[in-house]
Image (cartoon, rainbow, N blue to C red; front, side, top):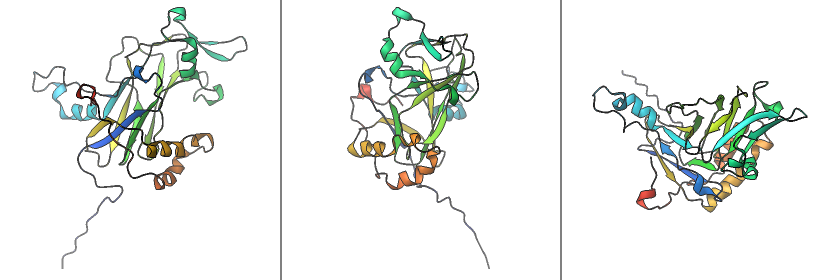
Length: 264
């Protein structure tokens, strides 16, 4: 008598081929300043030698899962405290700044001091309109742009995160922990801001990032889950409830001219 046992992973769909990740801007006003996501790749670097790192399958696979988001406008900020000891941001460019002070204040702010992870290490946040969504299980992580060289290192570290974009999509926030407040925070428009890293199931599937239409279903679903963080500390506990009310399809690629197609 022969007995055989087969183990199968029955968590999530057994998909094949590339996983499509959709992106859109939650706010269209002034949206032209925001760069589309770009796949990180070194294929244009040295590939003459057979052992070049640019031809290494492990390097190529790593890069293929990271998409670059560039800074939409110049940042030249200083940290200070006012006469009451309250932390404030200074626009060091002054009148030469390309960004109006009122608009900069809408996009960049210091979080409440009691919410800082480390005492005396301010956390600032840059509001961004990018939203990523998928119709299959996909986790996205925000990570520092470690594959891009910065001539002037930032005076702190990026405060990243990881969440499932197929269940809990939301406009992104770039968070920064300012460890050396004696130095300015300078990032020029077009400079790397962060990477979006996508994880799929199974892990060997490739990623295709496309701009998606903002359909009524997508609007309704975003309205359903938006603002939950203001009422619940552990929003991950709401994933099952959100998935049960999620429309089957949310990603509908936008038709664009070929020159403006997804750069991934």
